Image: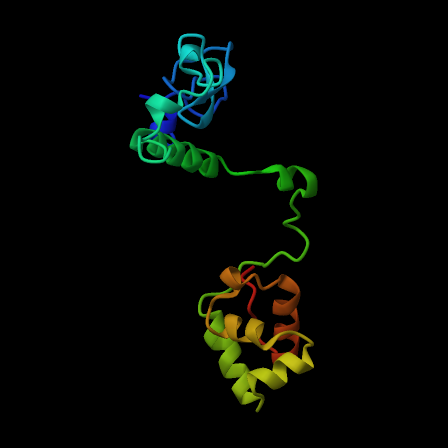
Amino acid sequence: MPKYSTGGGGGGSDGESCELCGRSTPKLRRANVAGANLLVCPDCAPHDDSRHGKRQSSDDDASGGEPSRKKRAAQRQAKMYDQAKGDAKHWEKEGTNYEKDRLPYLVSGYGGVVEQARQDAGLTAEELADELETDEKAILAVEQGRATRAGVGGSLIRKLEERLDVALVDE
């Protein structure tokens, strides 16, 4: 099955498969097929519109030079294929640093523990956030049990444990 028609079928993502027919071969070349820039094998190379000049008369409607329905469909599919490939260059340049402020394993029900301890201390979430020099949204995320999804760091958990005299880390 053609790779670009399904957005992920055919030859896989190894970069050595024809994007038109899916055949694996190391002899790929760039071709413009119905307005889509693809890597094609030698068997599909004759479909390259740029080699034959623009075939405007057969690919365009008679009403003002609009692209045909097939050509527009091929262009949309090629665009979707390009979007699905993604771009990981920023990871290569910047890398990742998961140890920067790693969130430790938290005890079950940690949100309720923090909320109850804060209320027992007579503090609002805003007051606690000001005291710990953090954002109120981070405090609320912890109290609601969303520390991981909110990107709360381990340093805030340690500050909360110390200030509220509670155990939040599951060791």
